[in-house]
Amino acid sequence: MPFKGGPSAKSRLQGHSGTGKIGPALRHELALGFLRDTVTAAAAAASVRRIIIVSSDPAAVMNGPKILMLADPGQGLNAAVDAGFAFARSLTSGIPVAAITADLPSLAAADLEYALEYAKHHPLTIVQDRAGTGTTMISARPGVRVHPLFGHRSRDAHLAACHILSPIPHRSTLRADVDTLDDLAAAVRIGVGDNTRAALIASGLLSPHPTLDADRPLSRSSENPIVQRKSSCPVF
Image (tube, rainbow, N blue to C red):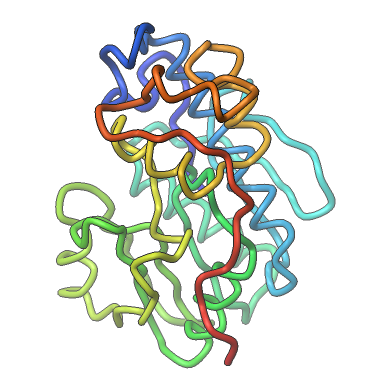
C-alpha cells in the first residue's frame, strides 16, 4: 500500500469546502485518515496475511500484527508499488500479491475479500475506480510478473498489460477512492472510518451530529450523513 504523505498529499483536494479552506496541513491530515481507515479495513480481511505500507512519511507509521513499514524509494507511485511487491515476495515465496490505494476511507473488509477471492483465479487482475478510468487495486498470482501502471487512465493501461477486470459492482467500497472534494462527499455519504471522520470533525468540515451538516457541504452536492458501511458484494 503506497502512501505519498507530506504537504503535497492529496493535492486535488485543495480549495474551499463550505466555510473552510482545504490547505496542505488539512490535506495531509485527511490523507493520513484515509490511510489508517484503509489499513484498518484491510487488516480485518481474513485472507490478508500482511500489509506493507510503502512510505517515507514518519506520520504514516502504523503498528499491528499484520503491518510492516517499507521506505519509499522516492521514484514515484509505481516504483513504490514495485518495491512493496518485491519486499512481500522476498519475505514469503509462492504467495499472491495485491496493491490497493491508500485513499479508501469507506472500505469494507468484505468488499476487499470479494476482490481477493476473484483474484485467486486469474494471473493478473484490476479493480477500477467508480469513474471507470482509474485503478484502486491490482493483483498477481504467485510467480506472475506484474508491472504497476498507476496514473492517468491507469485502468486502460492495466487492461492493456493483460490484467483482467474484476467484476466488482459500482457501489463497492473498494472502488470509492478519494481524489476530489466530490469524491470525499461521496465517501462520507457511504460512511467513512473513524480516522477520517475524526479529521473531518476536527477541521470543522463535518459536525459530530450529522443532522446539523445540511448547511456545511463538503461539496455542492454533499449531504454529509455518517452511515454504517456495508459490503456491496454477493457471497461466492
